[in-house]
Image (cartoon, rainbow, N blue to C red; front, side):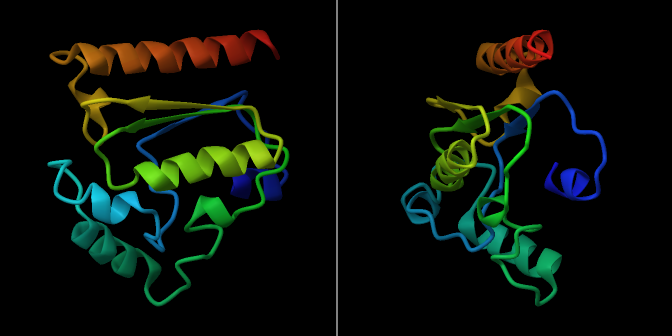
Length: 145
């Protein structure tokens, strides 16, 4: 959204960040306190993916780590994160950063879930509930347009 805004492209009415990877510096406390709890994402795996993606570029570059981006003028954003995720601290930091940038933001921390639990909505009630919550957020944002 930041790149679209900077290119003067039309922005969506709202957005949903599902289990966002928002800080490639991996400095949030949950990177260590939650490592090994979520069966789908580990700090070592994120470090490898970050190095591959960045190819030597700064981990703090706003295009790579939205917690460092200028977020002014973005539409409302819902952030959904699982309590067990290594990225929990950074998702909370992202939500705070959006709020400080005067972006309407909602943060949902889902207990006893794992990274992108939404993918299992057909068999996991919490996945379906999270998708319904995202839908309600988007519909409410559209009705305020």
